[in-house]
Length: 203
Image (cartoon, rainbow, N blue to C red; front, side, top):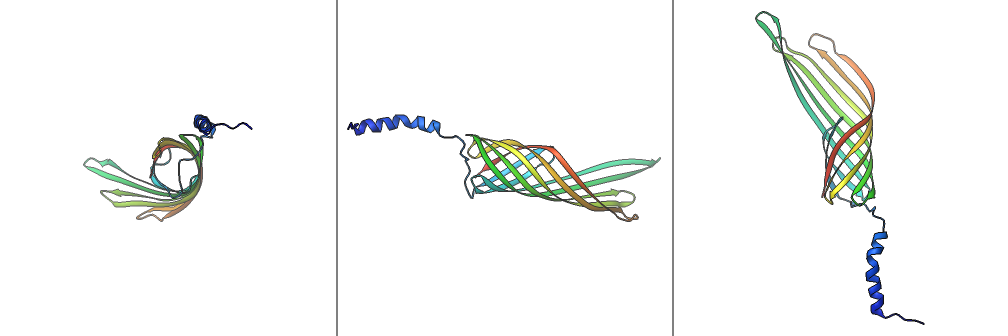
C-alpha cells in the first residue's frame, strides 16, 4: 500500500483550499440574528426613517415612520382697499410595521420582500385674516402593502438600493367649516408601481 508523506498531504490540502473556497456558493447572507439596522428612504410615494430588527439572518421586522407638513399662504383682494389673507396648513403622519424576508444573490447583493401594515392620519386647516378659522378636515387611513427590493452592500455596515411596491388603502374622515355641517367621507384606493430609494446602516 502506497503511503504519502505527511508533509506532501498537507501541502496538497493547502494548495487546494483556494479552489475549494471558489466552489462554495457565494450567497451567504451577511446578517445575523438580533442585529439592528437604521433605514432611510425617499421616493414617489413615501419618505421617512425607520429601523429593522433581524430575528434570523434572512428575516427581520421593519418599522418605519414618515411625516410631512406644508403651509400655503394666499392674498385675495376682493375690495379696493381690502385684502383677505388665507392660510392652509396640512400635516401628515404615517406608520408602518412589516415583515421582511431576505435572499442573497451575489456576495454584495441581497434581495427582499416586505409585507407591511400601514396606518396614518392627515389634518388640514384653513384660516382667514377676516373670518378666522374657516374649515378643517381630518382623515385616518389603514392598509397593507407589499414591496420587492434589492440592496447593494458597499460594506458590511452600509448598503444602498431601491424597491418597487403596491398598496391597498382605506381612508375615512370628516371635513367642515364653522357654519357648515360636517361631511363624512371614505374611499378605498389601490396603488401599484411605487418606487423608492434609500439605504441602511447596520450595527
